[in-house]
Image (cartoon, rainbow, N blue to C red):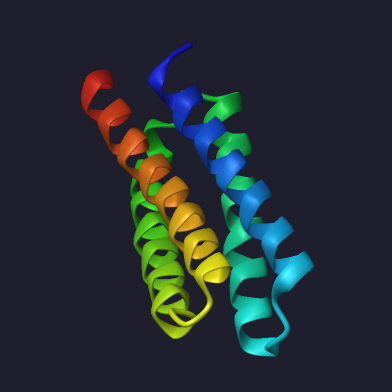
Length: 111
């Protein structure tokens, strides 16, 4: 498996966990909408990374990775009093950050 596909799979897994947690646990409309939107963006990006080499997608992966980390970092801080929510947000945030790093590394290898 090449590095682009690995990044795509990480984005898809992150999206799966993020959207699942959103549907199951989020109740605030703003956090629900924000996490659902970034989850859908991660699905779209992950599918494109898996289907193609993805070199042109690397900047998008970095932008989504920054937005993902900022959103889930904010949610983790906001939910620090609830250990289960905190761990979920940190875990999902790390999946997205890992996907963005894998995408950036794969672009360096391809160059």
